[in-house]
Length: 299
Image (cartoon, rainbow, N blue to C red; front, side, top):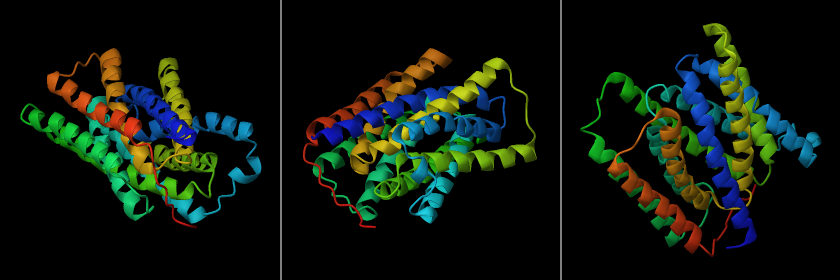
């Protein structure tokens, strides 16, 4: 494994951790605020770390001029819709459930990467993805009978599934754009798109006044999310999408800790067994995938 792969993996793991903390902030606020208002704060204040990143990289002259504006717009549209559905789902399901369903995203990303990005997905990567998928099934299937399948819960599950589909599409698009667009360009336009759309929806719905504590949570979600997006998009420059997909399974132990620390939710034994299996899939990928082959679409 070369240095670029190591850097890409470190950036992706760091982004996963920050996204988990962001979700904690959002989980606290979506119960009391319209989703549009939460999305606005998360997107608008994400501009703070993004602009700092642009300043440090000295990309002011290029960041506002995407090479493929239509493709960037498509990525932003999918990512924006995924943000709305994701935040809304958190009203009805907990962080761990959201994370579990979110693991449809790396599986779909790895599969789509074969056909869209023409990446060579080797045996190690397939084994890692299959192990992670089996771990999800072990967690979900035994718990179906114990779940009160009311309308709101099913609504939340459905929103989370839609989020996974939209997120997979936006990540494939981001990987395709990474050879032409900077991470700052993609993250900046995503934040601007979500801010503008959420502000419009929020204006139509009505704006609620937040307390100081709530404002801190909303602003914190934006700063954490903006930083995480920079790290995630940057990771795509150094490693294949299918390889980074396996590392997203690390979000599961992060979500378990977050649910316990912030919401006093303790998973049962099946959850821990599934977590061990999914985590093993990420470790297996990181340790044994030593000879990645890259074959990117020429643009």
